[in-house]
Length: 441
Image (cartoon, rainbow, N blue to C red; front, side, top):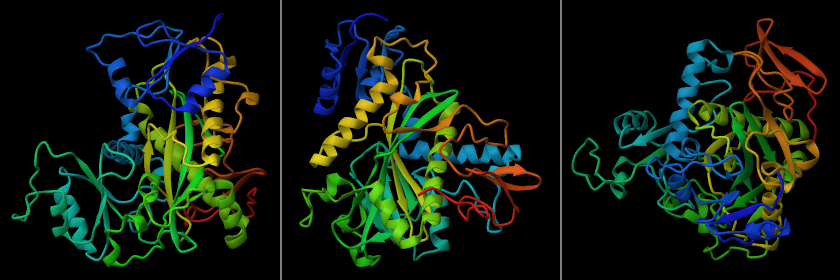
């Protein structure tokens, strides 16, 4: 469509504005006709609320799906993943296969989690099975590590609930909802410090699902060496990797910001653990991301005017098993270092190249299948739906070297060289790769 793109944003970040201006787009106000609105999650609620009655035209797009919170709110993410697993199990899908202890072979990627206050009694029952475990409490709707604390005793929930005199939990309305998750107490450490991964994932449509992985993610390190000691449960510089918290630590480095690139992590793991297990780890991370998106796809309002760039937070334990911690709807665009600024500028640039083809006035009727040459540092992670209810073909998982399939009574793994059959016993992305599989470094 002819004409300059007219943009508006309520997020005053230079990495955004510089990208808009570089394209020669024209800034307008919200009350004027606009084509592209990069908005906060608060604004998206107003745009799509029933009360406003606002209707977007075919030449308007926004950067959030209306009910993105089905994935990005901590309690709803877990709820949707649990529902997804149960549905697959009910259908008899091999993806819902469990081991002898009742754990999912392929879908065990979120820590045991309960919603409070709703699941309090279930949590207490689980807590008493392993009273020496540590749990982490998080408010469902907050970010940047705010309101998070660790517990290893039921009495410590007094921090959250004022009702400490009764044996049963009583909700303190309008007390905000929390999730409580089994704490990953055996994280992979580098230099003795805990870290997590921040990965960027772009979704252009949920039905059919089309998503992209950004290759330039990073690791966020704690400033204080990790210890599982109960005496340090309150030390967030030991346990929480959020930059918003770590930047206040005495040992915070303002030059590198306590960050590593994912490529540096990969090189480190290849040199210390080997290329094979490193490739398997990253394949498993990709698998987790796709399954989390498929879990919310049925309930997501797949509005044609929307796309979304999510910030995925992943923790790796000392067995090199990745865990999905949470998904952010508004990953920070604040730059804490020079390298951070470059990364986030390029992230927005590549995102816009996919969301707004050729930098022209949007047309929501296009098929959302951009050519490869415009992907920049994005790579296609998943396209379309599975070839049937139980199988996944390589064309749908172009970036993976394996996917669990039901094939001749056993599990197959997709490799760069073709299919390799494995027996069902012990096979799975969380266990090992197919025999003879060679991962790319």
